[in-house]
Length: 538
Image (tube, rainbow, N blue to C red; front, side, top):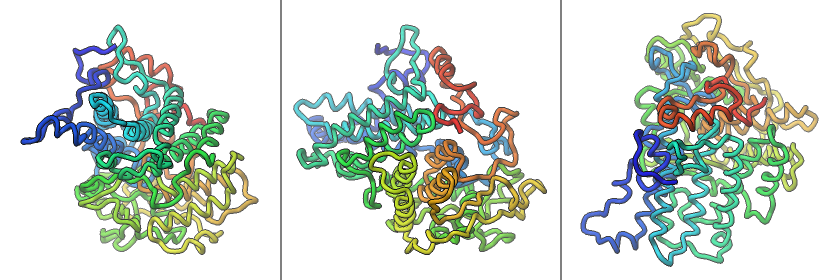
């Protein structure tokens, strides 16, 4: 049922599929260009597709869409800024407006842009849109699995549909994942003829693709890699489904996986990376876990991911900020290490031509290593995949040979000391903190299953940097790598340990109250940061 008037613009965003907040930008006819020429150039479908790809991580407010949430919860970064008197998401005091931005990006900039693309493509008679349909399906899953991994239930299969009471239904996270796999099936079917060369991608459609520039073979590899990622994600809650989907991704006939850095899924923003700008505001710095692991392992990727500190007390050191510390003023920690992302192919955080990393060959090999632990068909050998993951990550970051690093069986994470800590005894010296990882690097076939998994995930966590959302999800699923808990926990007891999810913002609750109430019933507990997601059972 489509309806045309709502008391709430938010509900309209969830139901209307032919009008976005960027509608004029996407559909305005450029001056001097006739409608026929404009349509023939396919700009009406190119623009919303490009908008959806960028909005996976960057919809205009990356700072509160990801940086002050997942980038921090993953352990990659931490803010030196005491937002709201240091009562903010970094200290588990939920900032409703911050959480709202994530949902705005998901529904306004991804889902509605993709709906606009679909509606507009249907106005062209006799044009084969199966390639762009395939990438649209893939973009949809890429974006919305991340949102589900933040909140749990999401509006996915019911987007653009209203009930008689004008409410919109959420999919439970379990149902959302089922829908993700179904959409990946459709995407693969659509892309295979182009990947095989049976069909040719229209040159105009390559302009709509800011990830692979029309390379259908790489899109198919991304579909399979994404399927394997999601299969591994649910392995603890639904082993049979995980195995079925994982083996489908690993099958030779599927079209392959991302196994070279040339096929890494990077969104070419064509503009400044937002982290570069946020660094300039002195609102983000490196996280303590990242520097501790890289320093302890004598990891040559350190200088590609972390800059030396500028503060007099720690000048020249590679030192991040521990999550959830007591902060009185931005100046206390703004001189600590700045996060870098200097890959061999260029700076992901470039101030003019940044790139968002969505999937990589290194991730694939670590996924395959875990699949091998699970005895999935065609997964290969766990040790071989693990070492390949390290090697190809070194290649991605331009860090030289990984042979000596992978053979190191003594190095562990370095202890953390914070000379500027406000709370003595809590975050001044953390060498004895039980959450500090003591896992070594070298693969050990005789290790316990838990130790093998910790090795895989710890190296995977380093390799998939700087994608904080994926790193946070894997930490919640496995508990690895071992991270420092927050020092200041302002959740009022709702989050007794590490944060598990974000609550759905009040704006989206109020705009769709019946739908929201039904969504809460699908969760494993109340709508707060302490409730675990469906797949998070460890």
